[in-house]
Amino acid sequence: MSTTNTFTDKISNELTAGLPAIEFRGEIRIVDHERDIAAACKELARHPVIGFDTETRPSFRPGVTYRVSLLQLSTPERCYLFRLNKIPLAKPILQLLEDRSVLKIGADVNGDLRSLHQIRHFRDGGFVDLQLLAAEWGIAEKSLRKLSAIVLGKRVSKAQRLSNWEAATLTDKQQLYAATDAWVCTRIYERLLRTPKLKKTQP
Image (cartoon, rainbow, N blue to C red; front, side, top):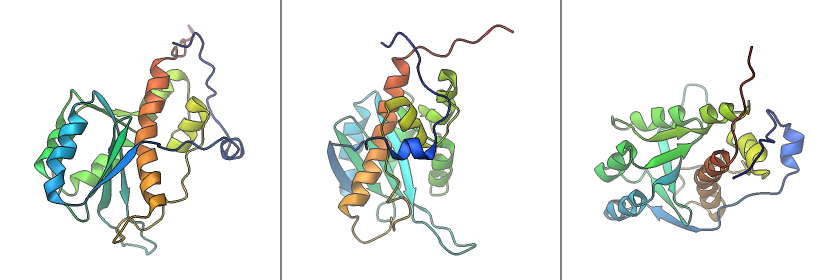
């Protein structure tokens, strides 16, 4: 465990852009057939902490929105990409999203959950939002890119954010981007837990 908290409260876009990139180096598995859902969820449920994120096809026309296209859930070694434009938000996935014993770490968790609730209702449990948590360490930034820069000293690429997440086949770059976004949340979480929180000054 670190003995001091040296996190800055904010970081500029310029400083962030100059940092080395961080990428997921584990295995990426695409789940786009209903028959593969249960096995993927069973493997994920074996881990006490997993990374969580979603992606939605961007809309470039006013008034046009799309449903969430992709759900990413990542262990340290393997990230599963559930293609929700091709498979249902099935019971095994819902059970995992409701399981309080499996911590699901993300950034802007409420926004992601709102998107998933538009598909099916479920009682989400065990979610940790880095945007809320980071403030306890004196960090004011909210974006995953800035949180990674401050906590890990690494830059998360956002180059694929506005790509088509409903494409027939996800490109290697899309897969890596999506996996990194979920996995890096667990890295940030673990680093925070190993660092002392900011001491509150007495009034």
